[in-house]
Length: 296
Image (cartoon, rainbow, N blue to C red; front, side):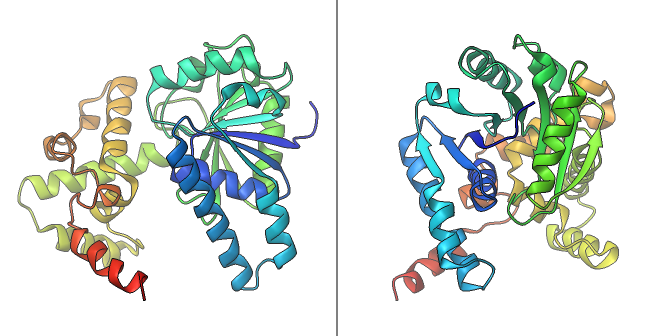
């Protein structure tokens, strides 16, 4: 399989833009795709700002900044990914939506291209079934935020070839990541363990065992976690947590994975975390306080 020189990233949200930033900084030409032009514009500005911060901290030269930004190309046309050697999707955590994308990509990308999913829980084997080359489909799960977190979880589908696996592992290591490998079971490694903990924290709140503050403080100081589980859920997005719990529940068939009713209720109410300003915690006042200082 040819060396990866051009990488396509589908989805310009926090995960997609973070992956695109990594690729650009580490010397790859990047095609960042999103059908939402406003989101694409925000992503480009965010990526440039993040790379500039690396310069200000002495981690990159100004020349390296210019080169990295110059390697980033934004597009809203899926057809432009025909040049990519390796495509990573980082779109909504929905099997149907991802399979539809893979079906379309299968008709566009070169025959040697690898299609990777940043899914945190969905079966790679089922995603690969939407393509004509399931041996070239793999899971490449970055942690959030991708430029900072050191881990990449690689997941092989039933038909993923050794060649595809080693090319993906090589790419992750080029990005300076530590790689762990999971079999294709719902939730893989990280979320198979993490999401039930978050769900149990919601049950603990739901049944009145303790306040949200005490639950989070207990886990931070009692188990040395950098964030409490409810605070972490807000950071991830409660809608994402709920989606993953549903995948675990359906895929593993055990009632212990059933989403907590309080988690469901919060998502139904639109309280999905930091990105909306309110989740388990209310961030709206702190966000309002930031705005005046930003104008100084």
